[in-house]
Structures are given as C-alpha cells and as structure tokens.
Amino acid sequence: MNVVLRVTAGPHAGTEFVFDRHDTFVVGRSSQVQFSVPDDGFLSRNHFLIEFNPPTCFLRDLGSTNGTKVNGTRIDTARLRDGDQIEAGESGFVVRVEETTLAGGPRIRCLGCGKNAPVDLGVSVGADEDETVSWLCDECIDHRQRYPTTDPDYLIEKRIGGGGMGEVYLARHLPTNQPVAIKMMVPAIATSNRAKLRFRRELDVLKDLRHPNIVTYHTMFDLDGQFQLVMEYVVGKDAHAWTEALNAPLSAAAAARIGVQLLMALDHAHSKGYVHRDIKPSNLLVTGPPTRPAVKLSDFGLAKSFRDNAGFAGLTHLGDIGGSGGFISPDHIRDFREAKEPADIYSAAATLYYLLTNQFPFYNFNPNRTDAYTMILEHPSVPIRAHRPDLPDALDRVLRKALEKQPRDRWKSAAAMAAALRPFIDQG
Image (tube, rainbow, N blue to C red; front, top):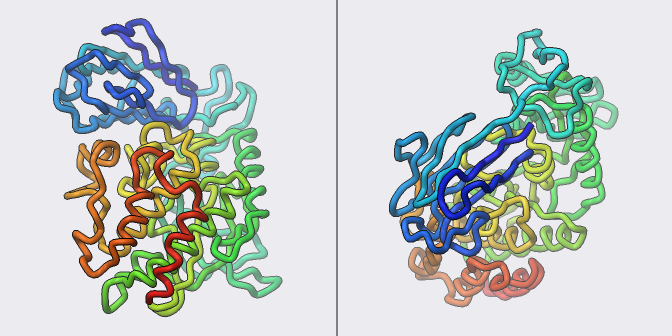
C-alpha cells in the first residue's frame, strides 16, 4: 500500500510524493530538508516532519514560529488519515492513503482467534493479492506475552526486559543446557511470506557479525505470527541502570572504557557494511566493577531490518522515527533511511554524554517537547563541563566533535573516536 502526499498550494503545487514503506519527510526553508521552500518567509528552517509507515502517518510540528495546521486546526502532533489537509507557510498538502488491504484477496483474520482484521490494517510491502498474510490481534498478542511459548528445544524461565520492538525472556537451550535470551516481536501489520523471508535473510547475515563487544545472534523462529530471536544471554544491566547503581558519578576513565568498547564494536560492524541506527543506553549491556566495565552492544540490525526496511513495527512510538529521541542525530531526523556510520558516532557520543551527566546534550532538552527535534537540528550542544566541572576539557572536545550537526565534521570513523578516548582510560 502507498501513502501519497500531494502539494495543493504554494510554489510546488501539483507535486506528489509517494511512500510505500517506513520513511520521514521534513518541510522547511533549510536546503537540507526533503521539501525545501527557501523563499517562503512564513516557514521555519525545519517546519514540520511526517513519519510514514503505510498506512500510518504521524505529523510533528518542529517548534515552528508560525505553526502547522491540520484540517484548519493548529497542532503540535497529529496522526494523519486519508483526506487530511495540512497548511504550513504558503504551502498546502493533502494526504491520500491508497488501498490498505489485499484487493480481491481473502479477508485477513487473526492467526490466534480468527477475528477479522480492521479495514485499515497495513500489509507488508511486496504482498501479492493471492498471497497468505499473517496477523495477530491485540488480545492474542497480550496472551502470548503473558503465556509465552517457543521452540521445543528451549525452555522459557522468566521475562527479563522489553521495549519498543518486543519482550525479552531468559530461556535455556535444552540440548546444551546453555542460557539464551529470546526476543519476541509481533509485527504491527499483516506480514506476507515474502516480507518474512526477506527479514529472515537480513538477520541471518548477522550471524557473521562476531565481536567480543556485540551480543551474538544465534537463530530465529517464526511461530504463529510471532518472530522469536535467539541471542546470547548477557548477565548485566543496561548502561543507564548500571550507572544509576553507582555510588558516585561515572568517572571519565570508566566512561572512556565504555566508549572505546562501544566504538570498536561499531567499527567492526561498519567495516562489514552494517549501521546500528539505534545506539542508546538501553542497548548497551554492562557488566563488571565500576572501574573496569565490560560492554556488549545489543539489538544490532533490528532497527533497520524489522522496523525500517520491513516496516513491521508500525509507529510503535509515535514520532520516534526509528530511534530514541534524545540520542538520534540530525541526519537521522532528516532522512533516517539514509543514516550512515556518522549517525552511530553521534549517538555513541550522546549516550556517553548522558551516562556522565544524566542529561541530554542540549540545554533544557526534553524529548517529549515539540521543539525536541528542532533543538537536535539547530541548537549547539552544551559543554559537558557545564554539568560536570570535574571532567577534563579534552574529553569535552572529543564528545563535542562527535556531536557536530554535519556528518562531515564528526570523527571520520568509530575507530578514530575510540583512539581519542583511550588516553582517558590511562588517567583513571
């Protein structure tokens, strides 16, 4: 299915943009946005953003001066529907949602209880009219989360976490008696066999991504419409919880040790063509004592494969554009599908900044405010010594270089940033 955004007023009237998968679209005067209208004085540089994951669309005003209207009402955020009209500056737009079910095909029903799917249910990209698709209703998803089952070779012991893309359980591989983590994910849309096979192929290549600082991916099951990813089990806490448990602020030496391990994991992945796209404290698993933390990077490939390429996740966190608000880069916001290695470097620096200060890199930043993305796109980062005067000025320079707005101004590679952080380990 497609969502069509048609320009109805302004200098670009008649232009159409078609979206058939998870994508973002920014309107403003800036030359770096997808729809640039530099001569419209009523537009802000970054005026509004639409996140598309057909048939779902979500609009966020980016803290614009003159505001954005949907159907005549000024809004901060809005879920868009077929026929909705958008006004911003001198430009107008209309949203058209094309066919959202498999025309001519059988009615989609829940795999668990047989309930009919809603008429506006999304269907994964590439589904044919005569192809069988899989879907679970909310009630059946809830039942599977409360009473999880898995492959007979595994025994689920307990739930150990969860987030935007699924629930995580500690399990035991019975033939070897080895503990594993199983992440269970349910697509928010109906999924075709072709889309599921593509997702499996994309994840299978991650088996070759072996590094001491990356959580190892083992295999995947597709059971009754639920994807189950079997991964290495790490006995540890996520980085935020680990630092919260410390009796004192995180030291520069410990932060540098965490940063070097994270960046070397990224350098290994980048050398093989992988970009994580979702670096944040909750995706870093930390073990060990406060002076010698050991790090494992988790969820490699999931943001790209499950959410961005396949679009299976829908808009689980509305307006989150495939990342976590306080840690995503400006280039991620502008066009997250094209986010490259520098986006990971930026997010790694934002993560270290947060672990050291319990603050985001921008003054008075709140990821839930309407101006959050504008701050990431336009505001300078606050020197880390404003929060932690005890930290070395040289460490501040390393992080601020990684937090530059333009990818070309950041560290040239994850390895280069890791090399810049290593001296601080020796100072601990």
